[in-house]
Length: 71
Image (tube, rainbow, N blue to C red; front, side, top):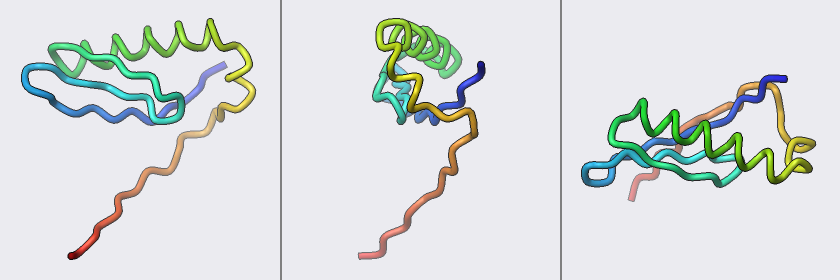
């Protein structure tokens, strides 16, 4: 089964921090690719340890939009 997750990656100093929005799992790496790979491993470990979490996951890609606020 393939699950699709929303990932947000931001740069903090010399590191890239990757977050899985749906699960709240976070990892990091020195490059974007390394941060993505580390996050993938962290999510796999999370799902192994939280098998009930799978029942709430969707196989469909999430809809991601932006919100602009003018102040």
